[in-house]
Image 1 (cartoon, rainbow, N blue to C red):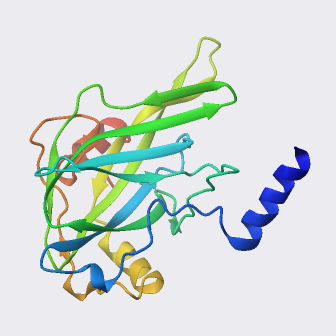
Image 2: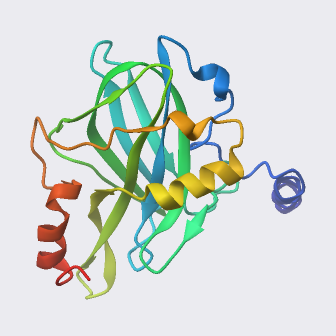
Length: 227
């Protein structure tokens, strides 16, 4: 068994097979831009000073078809499914850009999942009720939906030890940084026709996702005035 695990590790490091493709699936290119299809880009991040979950997932669905999609990252290494590599790491944010090919039309962010595993102990966090934060993917266009960052929360267990306690998602415009990364790493994606589709409203309210218009109030309540 030990030899088998060692062999798997060697294969991962030699071939790069342990770098997950959750955020950058194969098959997305300029040919994904058609009269009925668009490309959705943005960044998926976490606060460096919070707990790091085994995986973090942000769900959205096509309003017309009901098909559910996910933005998923695995910040913690797993022997069999790998780890999502970071494209950036600063004092306030760490994560990677994502690139998806999607049918054009209306979509809505509606839930999330945070998953933590520690041996036999597993725990999940999500919104008890679905919310609705709409945006639209325009056809034949690269659509920028912003940075979606997990502000992970901490709690204390029965013994007074610090433990993960879910989190709040912060949506913001980080186009300058994300565009530079896309131009450097995905030269096949034509960003000259990029449009912003960063959400501006909540059709079904949730306090667990903070939009740009709510950011100053959230930061003043949780971290002090915004610099």
